[in-house]
Amino acid sequence: MDCYTCHRNRQIDTLPARELVAVDEHWRVAHAFDAALPGWLVLVPRRHVASIAELTDAEAASLGTWQVRLSRALRAVTGCSKTYVMQFAEKEGFAHVHFHVVPRMPDLPDDRRGPAIFGYLGATQGQRLDELQQDEIAAALRARLDDAGPE
Image 1 (cartoon, rainbow, N blue to C red):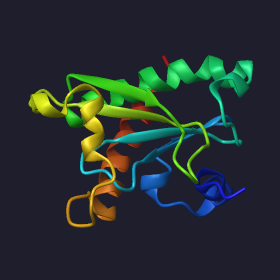
Image 2: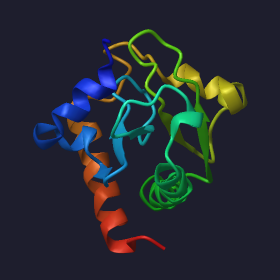
Image 3: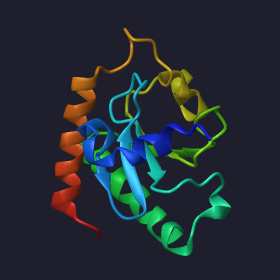
């Protein structure tokens, strides 16, 4: 099995800030590596899971808490008016369940709202946030999550 997320999870102790925004025993949060939108987060299980139905009760119980905590942190750090949360896990090499938690900015153009937000993912090298920008956003989000703690 060639799973990008499992490969990165095995390297958890050496991941840069952008790939380790937050972590617990069940979940890891990373900034999307190819996003043109600051704060596009990916919430991934720490073990390989190919379907939501495969989540343990403990993983499922903490999933909602993570989505809300990340949404609050994104609102505080980016000024977004809400977040979009999506899950597909269909792309080759990325079939590991993962949840996109995406800031919906107040000035988001109408043609990028809803599912069209994916126009900001898969950005070319010149359009995507560079690693330093991703690390800075990750650090701000981590600080916010640490200050807020679980609700």
